[in-house]
Length: 215
Image 1 (cartoon, rainbow, N blue to C red):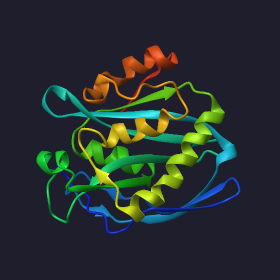
Image 2 (cartoon, rainbow, N blue to C red; image 1 turned 90 degrees about the vertical axis):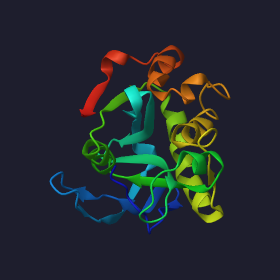
Image 3 (cartoon, one colour; image 1 turned 90 degrees about the horizontal axis):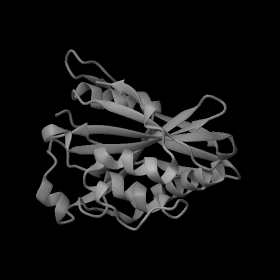
């Protein structure tokens, strides 16, 4: 499995409604040799221009019982930005279930282009699905701001990654439930490929609108 080692942390600075992200990841990769062009960029997003948010789900593992989740925020000026919460690994190391379970990893909030995040999963041979979420725009703004500003806290205070309670999905879930009617816990946090069906009931998510964007 292709692993990405991070030697840069994303940090966010805001002024009024504008949020500037430093060290956004926008790598270019080729499938022939897995080489990648390391590219870190800076970009500014106006929260007042948010038009929506999509849930990105990338199933993997035996029979695709597990999945990685991300969020893509869209803006009226055609900009997009994607957040992926991941465990920070040492250079050259592989993800270890036991280390993840017993809090041996730290969280990384990796903001970047959707092309980067989806392209990495595509190289791994994973399918990636997009689910548009039909949510109240004001709460989507609050969610974006909360996640953006929490990025600095996560990296400054070295927030622990925990497979069972603070992973790629539950981290986003715990923030989202401040603004949306989500329970404290739900079984789909472990069987994430089933998460869209749960959200279909909560938020009138139209599964017919899902889009396969890789695999």
